[in-house]
Image (cartoon, rainbow, N blue to C red; front, side, top):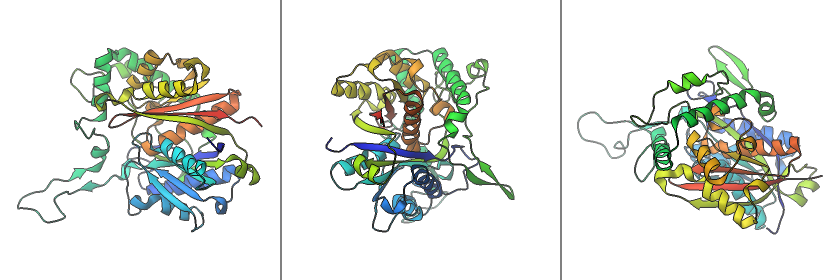
Length: 393
């Protein structure tokens, strides 16, 4: 890399359960809220930001397809700034950070805000036969949220691809449930830690409003026996349940991405720097294996071993994804997802990568450790891994 790319000031909204507290708030409004909070935390005047990159899988609301530009202007960025929407499935939030870094590395900008979000609760229904008229009889409304959760090749739900991974590599239901319980326990214990990068938001509740300042999804009190009693969701006799899968949630997360020299000239305090990343393709039918070859490729490129990375954030799309990374790579559970993950905190794909990056940045800052990898699998068969390093002042 010709320029040192740093990260600073990240913030996010609390994540809301599907159909609950955030369902009436437009997705762009969540993005604006996270962007303003991110700039405020960084101590950065929006006038100095030249690009906003927004990761999003499912556009919703009127401004959805132009959300990046809308969020940028409404968050106070100058009209002369530029904006970009990106979609790399569950890695969209991380891809937004990478895309911002690439623009800066190539001299097409100096300071960006990047991240993303989803509001699946606002996913519209579509009548695909309505444009040019249709024949007699009732017409079917299609759930666009269902589109987002299906493999485009086989049309299997993503949970069915998790079943394929579990079957191919002989992972046990008991191990998945054990992992899910641990995720919930960790999220509950980390409530204060997580709250440090959550920007409280006002939500409507009947005829009044209240301040939402914590994630809605975690269930730290869940008992192992309850998970064991849950029925498989995607396949008769299967192993993947709602309890050992990521929860459907709404939210947004953003972080400042900047050239270090420019950031320091503006008075920003870099928290971490982007070292490198790798993105690979994997068989779509077992897309959950994605973190393994992505992390492996990144480590090989950097000449590092698994144990030379101090901390890992690997997205808990399904518990089997993390079991696979543990088994195939030797990633220790004692240095991975210490503050919960997709199973407990929720997984809005556009926001998840940015949320994980915020957690990794904060973990490095508070522990004094050197580096971390953020990684995830992605629908249609990809894996992404990004290496960051704590900035020593």
